[in-house]
Length: 188
Ligand SMILES: [Zn+2]
Ligand SMILES: [Zn+2]
Image (cartoon, rainbow, N blue to C red; front, side):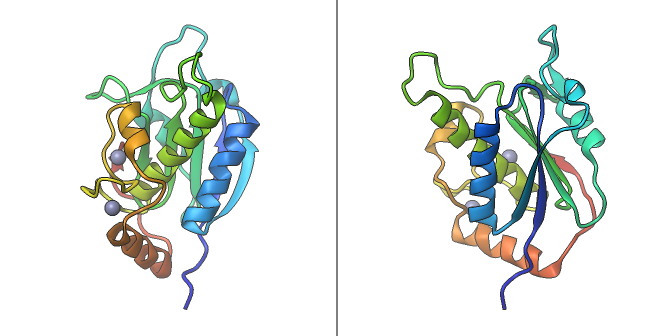
């Protein structure tokens, strides 16, 4: 029997383009079999890049995104994110398939790179799947090409493949079959 389809609200904040949003929606739909609805984040100013360039606390952003049981929200922002212990993070998620945030601030290709916007969109898609993976209860994985492998740098994001390994995939299928879970701790 096919697992129930997860429903994900994908929200774009600040200067995140519709092009990147559409690409992320596409990979999330393909890889998670999710039903994705794409929208501009309400009160985008609070979630996008701040005028003074200050970093935003990833945990606080997750807090303000909290959704109802059974709902999953993913915010794409151009704000640079940090946590109390990490200088920067590419994203963060709260376990229980509830909320995840991905920052594009450090994912852009250098200006001279001809892959430019396409590479940014690809990285954003991988990070979105990684954070949603945490949201659905996955921890970091040692498989070299698995999307759940820990990445501290964009090079490491690029080295990941475009899919979950079979063990992580099995876990996701179990979670989707079991239905909504209780919210738990945060991960990045
Ligand atoms: Zn894995
Ligand atoms: Zn992670």
